[in-house]
Length: 326
Image (tube, rainbow, N blue to C red):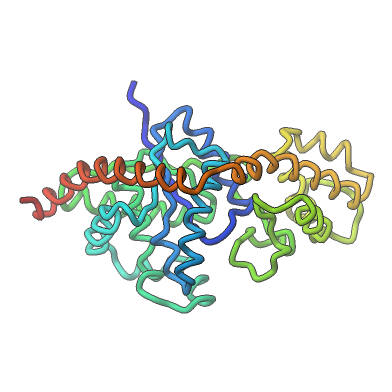
């Protein structure tokens, strides 16, 4: 039986945080056992905000290394830099011609990011490029966080519109959302998602952080004025966020964590969460340090060559549909 195709990408905007890892990357690794997986470092998406080119080039490589260290296997998955496969942007242009500006105006992430970084055409239209990323390889499913569901809905709308106008070409990709960890929250504001763009470094834990940094940031994590360790998003979002992080990294159930740490106070509980995070991230930090930059660059170039070959076969069909063949 032919395996279904999964596509996903990660922006190289600095070190990956634990929310990325628990909410997405661990799932990417597991999916390699069941699906034909296509993963890429979506560097074109990342240049919609001001950046330093030298540092950005380093960030691209570090993102690739971190993903491999976390378990993305270039021997089992197609893995490459988005910018090295021009069919992504070609399909994005074609899809852009059937995308209404009203749809783009409703994209909540555009509103949020433009408020912080200023508006530009790339930021405005990047949901169309995201749709092209997914549809280019005829992906059947996409592992996404809760905040990306709106973009996947746009992708499905564009696929349906293209199929109606030019003939059946694209499948309707389905979301794959993990039951837990899909939305790890900020350590300083547990009502907001953990984010690399948050100016407060104490709001997040990066997967390559050293143990001392991890312990300091968890010690400063916002909780509440009570002392009971209880899973309750409405009344105790800070504590609940830490419980979920610990549960995801240790495999312990929420109930067992509540039983063990419920009346012991927040200090003891935070120390235990820190131990779990340090232990859980240690293999990734070790694998990252041992990686050879030149070898990773070679793997990414090989992946891009394979991706261009595969993408071109699909893109020829699109050109024929819209009258651009020959």
